[in-house]
Length: 147
Image 1 (cartoon, one colour):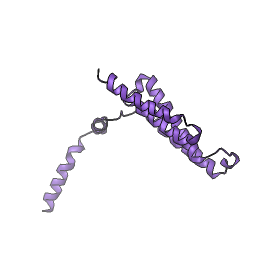
Image 2 (cartoon, one colour):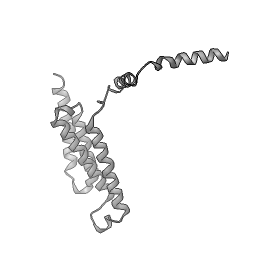
Image 3 (tube, one colour):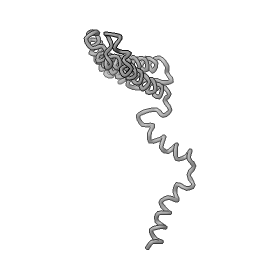
Image 4 (tube, one colour):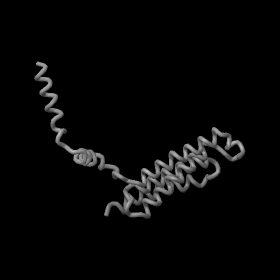
């Protein structure tokens, strides 16, 4: 009985013994490639800048740097910076064909939402731009993507 279990376990693991690491990674890469591109350095760079920006804002709040400025609102500054990161990333995706992919309008909408949250009452004009971007996005999908 023990030998039978050991033999069945060896059979299940034996199929992977002759596979190289590259073959295993290429199989997993095929499954992950459905929605997002693998190895997209722009996404990795954006996430790195996002975490660095968050660390700088938190460090400014912890070290009382923010108390010397009366306009400083930690969350507002954080969301405004993240909105800038998203909008710059969307602009780069729009301008550089290597990084272009579907859904760029939604990156613009998301960036404007973050900017509206970050700036709050300062930028009342964000919301009309946001609504306009959503309308343009709907028209784009209706007319341009049907060709």
